[in-house]
Image (cartoon, rainbow, N blue to C red; front, side):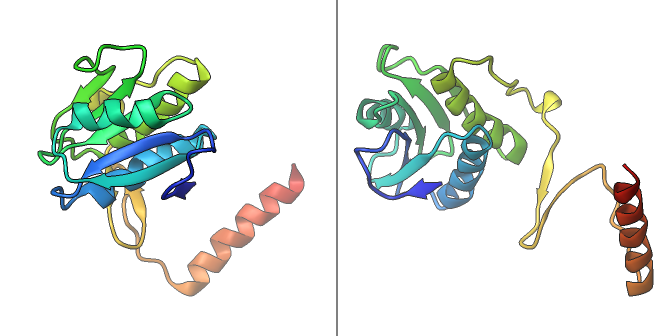
Length: 164
């Protein structure tokens, strides 16, 4: 869940540079990852451009003591107030893999929950192609189906579910 300002609510703060035109797409992926873990986040735009500074500032303002920063250069940082200001837990540069960005959001939530982190290695994260209408893993082939074929597939799925 994304809220612009609510300092009373325990949330992860995500601060982003106003100079990064891709920040809104990056934010969506962080928020989805956090939402999967059941931890809410709020976003705030800043004129600053350094992701590490933004992340630490966000962590200081978060009741959960966890913050994410998105820099002007596309770098992203995950920070905790228990760490030195210049040493974030994770610092990634110019990440285009949507699954990795989502995993970073998941890891922010897992830091709060105290559970093991997901891998941020692109090889371990299935790339997701961004399409304005849907998100489809690359290994799924697009198949054009006629309405009657879709109807038959849905009927088969429903029949199998009823037999369970």
